[in-house]
Length: 347
Image (cartoon, rainbow, N blue to C red; front, top):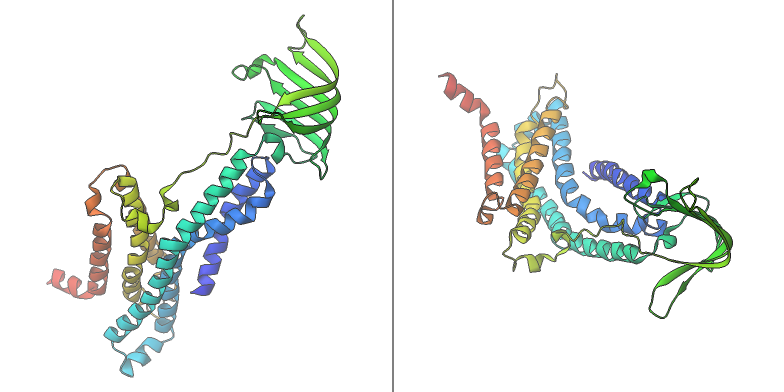
């Protein structure tokens, strides 16, 4: 199970990390927080990857026992189907304990730390996220900034700033371009931050118009705005589980039912894996793997859709997600007794 878990986790983290890496390269956030964000977001991946990896591990293990005829040998030695179910449920209990620890405690704690990091990034100014030697689009594309170097004191050299004067009409090309040999940030008595530029020129207006201006300066101050391109996602996933038990709103209840459901689904998929792994040795142990994984993913998708339904109040929150577990328990029962049901239907 551990090997399967690591493989699935690496694939999932790689997809998420690429998104954060793009944002850091674009100057939306600093590169120093990338690995911290990934570490705190890790439990959010684990809460669903652990059950899926557990199901996949059972399918591969039991499937191999059937293909190698070892399951027949075990049954001949007195290993009854009831005993196999008992062993599977015992393993499921251990996985449930691990998943409950992640879903009910570690994940909310990690999400709260993510909110803290994102808030810190939001409080940074545009020039705090500059990458030397790279043209960066800031202020939602309204401003393009470049600096050749940033030293340890935060001083900039060879600065280029181009900003549209009318953000609603960028095609009009009415812009202000500022060039400076050096610059630094300063804070006034009101707490506002300014970029103070030295020895440069400012070109303002639309090229070719009579009002086009060229200004040379020794010192020029420009107000530095905070970066508004980072949006804080105040999700219920950051709320402690004990607090969710006291919530009565749909959003809080949906999150609570989701956390409980990722734990309760483990014994269900454990029982489901036993009959699905029964394969003909000539067919190979991977014969039923794809249909089984599709069924497992349908389980997860159904829980996710149910969570969204509770949050949107599509159905009463009192129903929770219990009915979804009931449906898949029924599916498990049908698969377990499929041969008997088929014989009854034929007769």
